[in-house]
Amino acid sequence: MLTQIIFWLISLLCGKPEVNIVPSGQPTREDKIKGLIVGSVIGDAAGGPVEFVFPVEQSRWTARELRLDGRGVLDLSTRFKLRPYFKEAAPYAQWRDNAPSGTITDDTRFKVIFFNALENQPTLDASSFAREILTFEQQFSQEEYVLCREWLKEFKYAAQWQLGRPETEGGLPPDRMWAGRPSMAGQMPFLPVAALRPNDPLWCYKKTWELDFFDTGVSKDIHAAVVAGLSEALSEGADWESIEETMRNTDPYHFEGAKYSRRMLNTWLDFAHDAVRRANGKPKILFEILEQELKAEKWWECWVPVVVVFSCAEMAQYHPIASMQLVLEFGHDSDSYAQLMGAFMGALHGQQVFDPVMVQTVKDRLYKDYHQSMDDWLILLKESTCKY
Image 1 (cartoon, rainbow, N blue to C red):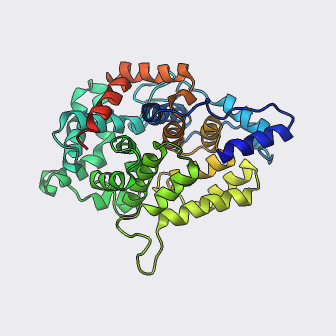
Image 2: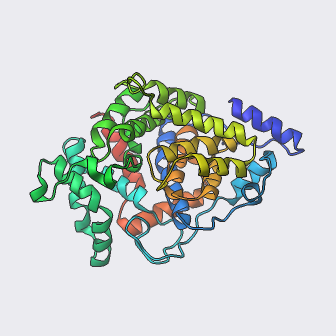
Image 3: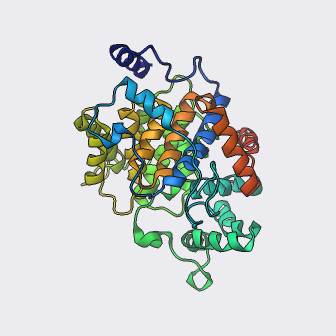
């Protein structure tokens, strides 16, 4: 892979021995699917404790105006870890005060709802997903029930509407969610869709579009394109270049051909590369560009995770773990950014790219807190590929 060659050259020039970015050998399709799921959950759990925390804990590579060389990439990769939470439970965050390391947030809870729909409903469609949203709160104790109701409040309005229930019965049109702001909500539950049809980005795009009833327009296009890119990442020989090419080229509803406009996905992918170019190898400058030019009022608009992930991955020379650490040091909605980075890195390189202790930690916490088994999710995905 070109990025590995570049990394080797940088390391050599810096007087460091060659460093393997990823484990040797081509991961199997099964390893890649495991990586997508595990990487996403690890990213969520790693980003949760620092989500919207200010000031952000930064290394010298992001706090000072330094060029990120091979040594810096290695240093960043050693800093990535799971942290405990030092904050109170909140609806969109962790559901336990001062929760232990490996605890997930809403990014993974939405995947729990996705897998519930995949297992419990006869067909995986928008209405089946809506039904699972409406019943999800029933399994929790009173304290968690209150948090769950607040977390899903906006989504339940849209779910009722999806199921044909008018305003008098609790339904409100999805277009009014977050006052019409284009959110990144669809990037939380639907990443596993890529594992239903690996290397079939068109099907994955259309299925994600179908499921994503609570987003509109540009949000649905960006989320569906992300899942199409993950479908490509699961194929043999995929890399970041082929992922991006797939995302750009998978455009069944012709966003790029719209009159008087341009597809926002392509605009923001171009911006991500241009930001890295202008930063000239300095993460601090990249972060300043993102802060000033991302046009993010809430930091969870639909394009923000894509720009942060693609620019940080390029800045970190596509080193999987250094890229995830760089996302955490940028801050803001860090769990959502890191879960997306983890999904891409895991889908490309397989589960073995992640520390086995981290893998086991998030698996154990997910089961203890939600009685959900990632191993069961993987079995369910394997069984469901026959249906879809």
